[in-house]
Figure 1 (cartoon, helix red, strand yellow):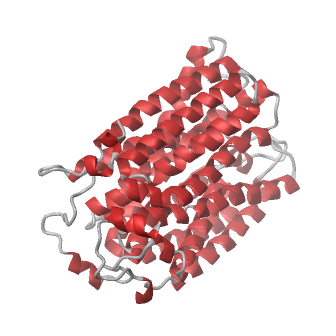
Figure 2: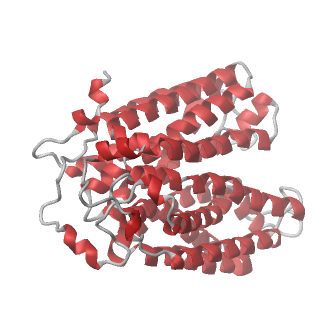
Figure 3: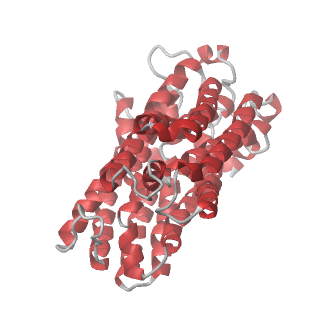
Length: 468
C-alpha cells in the first residue's frame, strides 16, 4: 500500500490528459470546504453541551489555526512525497477528525470535539489544501491562475454542498427536528450520526482525488508552450527559490501581509453574514425587515460569490498579472467597504451587491496567491512556500472575527444592533485593506542571490530532500 502512494508511482504516462488533475484536486477541496458550513449544527452543539457560542465557535477557530500551522510545517513534506500521499494523509486526518468529534458529541466531551474536528481535522485541512497546488502549477505553467482557481474554488463552494446535505441528514437522524422552524434544534445523537456520515463520505471522495492525481514527467511541458515567453512578464521568474530562502525575502513577507489583510477583511463579513444583513435593516423598534430564511439565502449567495471569485478572478490574473489583480482586490475592497458603511443600509440590493463583490475578492485572493508565488519563486518547492504563507490565514482567521465582534460587543447586544453599530468595524477593515494595498505595491522581483544555482536543476524530490 505504501508503495502505491510513492511519488514515483504517480508519474503520468504517455497520453495522460492534464485536465484530469483539476477534478482530482477539486474532490479534495470540495470535501475540506465543509469547514465553512459549521454554522448548520452550531446551535445543536450549543444546546447539547450547554455551552456558549464562543466555546462552540472555538472548534472552527482551532481548525483554521491548525490549517495554517500544518500547511507551514508540512509543506516541504508534501513537495517531497508528492500529491497522492499528501491527499491520502489529508483524507485520513479529515475523516478521523469527524470520527473523534462524533465520539466527543456522543459522550458529551467537548474537548474531544476540539481534538477531533479542531486539531486532527485541522491538520487534514492544511495538508489537503496545499496538496494539489504545486502539481497543478506544473501541469499548467501556461495558465497557473486558471488551474489553481479551478481547484481552490472548491474550498469556497464546499459549503454549498455541505450545508443542505447536513441539514437533510440531521432531519433524517432526528425525526423531531424541523429545519424550516428556526426554533427547532437537532439532537446530539443526530449530530453524532452526521459526523460519522460526513467522515465516511468525504473519505471516499478524497480517495478518488488521491488515486486519480498524477505528476508530470520531468521536463514535460504543454504542447506549444515556450517557457521563454514568461520572461517578458513583470515579476515572473524562470529561476527557482527554495522554501528556506523564500522566507528570507522581503517579497514573501509583503505577500504574507497582503494575504493577511485581504482575508481579515473578507472573513469579517463571512463570519457575521447572517445576523449582519438582519441588523442592517432593523428599525428602531428592534424589528428587522429581513427574515431568517432570507438571511440564510444571503449566506448561500456569499458562498457562491466566494467560489466564483476563486475561479473568475484567478483566471483573469493570467491575463492582467498578479500584482494588478491584487490592486483590484484591495483597492476595490476599500471602495466597497466604504460604501457598505455609508450607504449599505439604504437598500438590500446595494447591501447584497457590495457584500458579494467583497467576498469575490476574498475568494480570488486565496486562489490567485499560489500563482503569485509561482511567479516570484518558481515551481521548485512552491507547495512548501504556499504552506508557510498560509500562516497568514491562521492569523486573519482569529483577527477578523475578533475585530468585528469586539466593536459589536461595545455597541450593544445581539438582536438590537443596527447598521450604525457596524460602521466602526467596517471602516477599520478599510484601514486594514489600505495596509495590504501598500504592501502589494512594494512587492519586487526576488534578487538573484536567493535563486537556486542554475547548474543544480535536480528533480523536485531530490531538491526538497536537500533543503528540508
